[in-house]
Image (cartoon, rainbow, N blue to C red; front, side, top):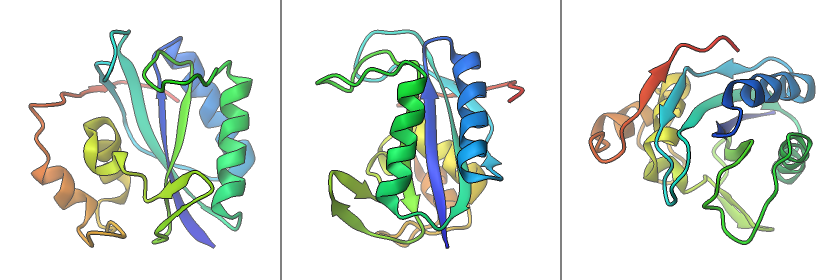
Length: 162
């Protein structure tokens, strides 16, 4: 069984889509560890602000099967995947980590590169997995977050009842 972490984001009907996504993830994977929700500006395009959070769960499914479930949940929430990832979206579910697996196959890179690149991914991950270590660097997520340039990408914690 692997410990899995998934990033959740939405900037279209954010509260409703995130609540519904959490319900769908619970239905598919069982008990979730859920980070606080953060709001941030859209990155890479002009759009409404995003809500982002991270969930963790244990699974016996392989990474490709988990990714398939995530894409199905996105599709059921009206997510349309285009040529560019830089657009508004109803729901974005990204598999960040699958235990300590390091892999780049079938279009799925683990650990996901966005972990160390974006505050809206690293901060919520550090909240629920701060003592765990990045599979490549070996650095704890809490230490990666402590060293992150928080002025470059600002976040605001949101009171959110999921």
